[in-house]
Length: 360
Image 1 (tube, rainbow, N blue to C red):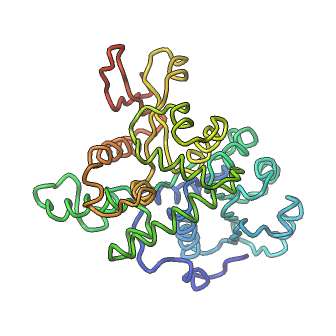
Image 2 (image 1 turned 30 degrees about the vertical axis):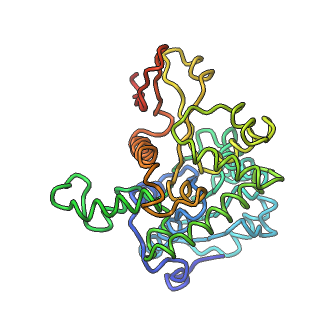
Image 3 (image 1 turned 120 degrees about the vertical axis):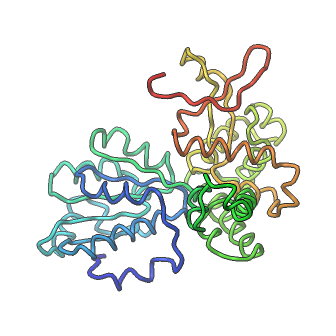
């Protein structure tokens, strides 16, 4: 649909919004010609960021802005030429911006957007996707040199603290407030829809909804996993063993799920941004690939929901694991998940986190 004024988008913006640190980078990306791709799990606020970009463009004025959600695929989108003609039939005289939510729903999205981009029509294309393997793999070859990628995670502890007019670096000044935010974060995580509601019961229900509808139903469908219970069992195993060395054989033996299906479930959970794997640090890169990985959760609230541990009392015995997951996640926010490793010596002495900088 074509967006003409701010009133049209007000219903899509939540009443309470938390400023995201990625927002300035996204606004800057709108000025560049490459295709923008915003990845992230469902319900972390990708659509909100899209609407905020649209809101900013509307306030400036002079642009033709289109928004489509490919969860319900328009008939015109099946053929890129027809889609372009359809858009051009609604044009004014301004710069053209086309925003496409859930772009991975179009099977040939990589070739589709490459074709349209290479026509050099001057259109700015912005895509979002909830499944990394779906969208990233489909655009990897087609859009080499043609795209800028962004990743939107659940809210970081820093963003939540800042929203409360506090600073992580001023512990003495804001100790009580920071301690409360930390306790809540360790239990409920950082999904915006959870953070912005009050009351533990409401938060628990929201997390249960997210874990069941997104984690179990959506990811199972996206990655072709026929038995949803298998995916849930693998996720629960990982939730119990965050920060531990991942053994696919042990996981298969303990759950009774075949190894091939275990691998498929692991790929789905990682591709759907539920968990992240970090590899063992080695100067020989080939050894990194052969050593077993450790697994951490993208959001602690989802982890706790899987285990039914959504209270400070229930996570008491898990605090060490949760703090380690939090530290690893905070390091990843600064350096990127791909640059976080762990190190284990031959006598089993271990360092939980090694940051690998570009210069080595």
